[in-house]
Image 1 (tube, rainbow, N blue to C red):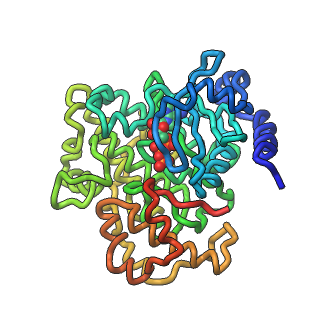
Image 2 (image 1 turned 180 degrees about the vertical axis):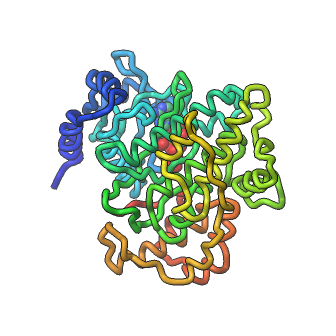
Image 3 (image 1 turned 30 degrees about the vertical axis):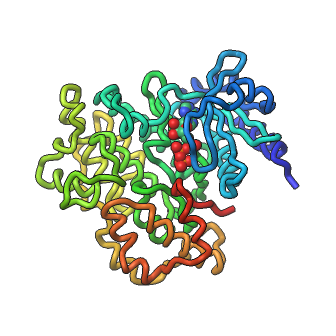
Length: 412
Ligand SMILES: Nc1ncnc2c1ncn2[C@@H]1O[C@H](COP(=O)(O)OP(=O)(O)OP(=O)(O)O)[C@@H](O)[C@H]1O
């Protein structure tokens, strides 16, 4: 049996010699050479975190603590909660994927401790997560338009790297404001790879069990478990609209006619009033053309049909000065979904080796996640009588319903 320690050794050694091709990545590599991922002793991390005292937050698989290594580097330490069964798998998944990733818009994994506690050690990202500033803080105005725009661009570049330019092609599956950390220069770093999936180059999508967070999950993924890079594009679009408006999609309640932030943004866009979704704290800093472009990009990314959504490469081009005219977005949400959902989901394109047994498990997982995982219009369809009729909850899913973090286990 491969021990946890051996697992990491096998994993990390070859990745330290990963080759990168672009000059930008080579810059990054110089930094990484001096900060190789390593095995930390439990004692080192206990001292560094002052006995796991300074808690930064609580994630799906355990608490995160702030610490400082003897060499002065600040760290964030994620501890696998003993009670978390799904956490063990997410924990290993996160380490495995992050060990091979090097990009300025993706958080760096510095190392780990396997015994007696399982701990992952990251660079500490000083301004912590975007959600804390955007939704929970009176300090929202520190995020002026220039910063928000650079977050929009940086997250797009990080996702493009994951989808197309990293050694393994990766779908993050849980892009949301709390998984975007901001460094001292307000540059975004994508974090939390517990649920990320590799996907084969020759497949456009895979069928999988659903895992994700309320308000950010693409409809085809939440309902059918159809996972492709376009699920991340959708979540990215939600984050873009949240950044512009300062409102959280899943708790949006500004307009009784609109089920969620996406509907509201589309309604105003269709009336030629996109700028009205803008957070009032941006009034003095905003560049109206950029804001309008970003609203349109957010709406293009959250279109119900994944084929209509742009790729992250196209988003990066749209955000560049030479982006040119943008397409007209179609309505976000579940438009067109009712008709596609009438048949049983086909597994023909699955590359995950789903047996029929897995398939029915996928269907049940999908139901439960969708019921509590998508906001606004999405929750309308997710919790609709249609969904209950076609995907009745099963006892095997019941335990997941009580998961306070809205996460679902990933398959092996
Ligand atoms: N490297 C880091 N630097 C600074 N703060 C961090 C770092 N990693 C995590 N945090 C803080 O710890 C909190 C918990 O992180 P974690 O990724 O475990 O969970 P989450 O994304 O908030 O929730 P969930 O696991 O349900 O998605 C984050 O919201 C963030 O504020």
